[in-house]
Length: 291
Image (cartoon, rainbow, N blue to C red; front, side, top):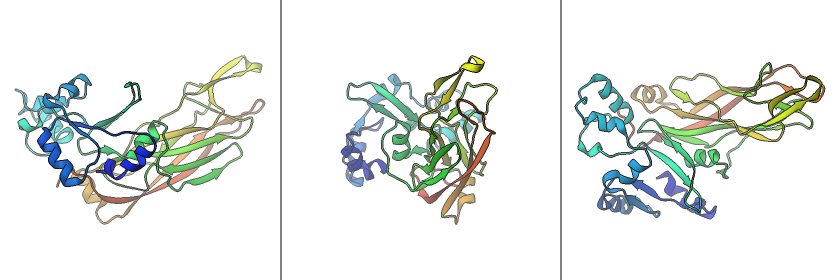
């Protein structure tokens, strides 16, 4: 449904949409009509394409097999498939996710979720692949070594939707920041403060470049040109999380940007820049587990 709300915007950017599921043509046609879907929904009968792409939900398959009564299997089924009991209607479902395919039919990126009730927002996927996303108000910060812009991929999100926290960083002239792989220096890092029922992934780094420091005959990975650090986050949609978030209309997320900057002559002391993102909380995604 979020894809449908953004379909005209995405098509204007030259991005086409196709949904694929294991549902029958009749089921998809009914869903399309009831919800005003205007992009194609394709029926993958027998989950043949799902299997070829390696995204078959094996937890569902195991729960329908001889180990279906195993408590560990049941717990995984509740987490990765459904809070209802396992039955044949779950056979063949995929793990939810998004493939980005270029005009030549080559997959250039894939964004997948672990839990059946979680979904990436459109803006988060677009940010991940470097495409323009809906602009969200950003916080601007300037230090002696860099300028940064901190923003979220989405101004609002429902519990169970995966969004991105991002920082665009521009080193000042002559400065470089240390990238992963550098030793004996403070690597630039985007750290998110722990928040109950907020799950975050490891920061995503772009490709760095090698800087040669002649006096020490040293080669280290650095960032000298503008770059973006991105952390994916999701406010969980479990029963416990829903209870904890009840009555709240926003989520304030705190974090820091840690870095050490150097120029051709001086390595400056490490710096910690406090950051904050505010996300409005909406309703819950379809399929979210109920208490």
